[in-house]
Picture 1 (tube, rainbow, N blue to C red):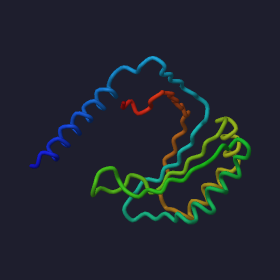
Picture 2 (cartoon, rainbow, N blue to C red):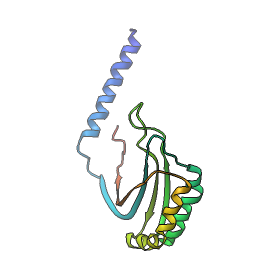
Picture 3 (cartoon, rainbow, N blue to C red):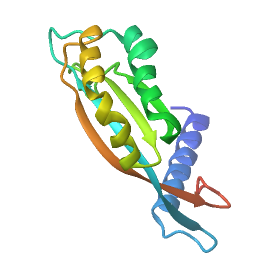
Length: 153
């Protein structure tokens, strides 16, 4: 190994060690953390199963906009996640898709979905034969302001 490469490796290891130490130390004065509660998140998750179908184009262009229309002004936004892989190589992805609605009020969400539930369920046949798993949760957002957010000098 030549001298330049050896020096480079030693300096790199030193810098990496410093970065790890700084990120594991107690935050310095001047760091503020705040939590913001509020939005309700409705996640509709479609588990991957061998032999099941999912028409993403229909889901994106027809189903999700239909449901979003029922939610009206209570809807903040919605997202669609398209499953592409598992976190573990050579294993099936856990979900084909996850549709998420962010709303201001759970009560208003339930009031809007209740009368339209049969229409929503009937539309499933147009894009999938997978039974979704639904999770309703409260979103808590944490904000952090640091003079040096990376913690590396």
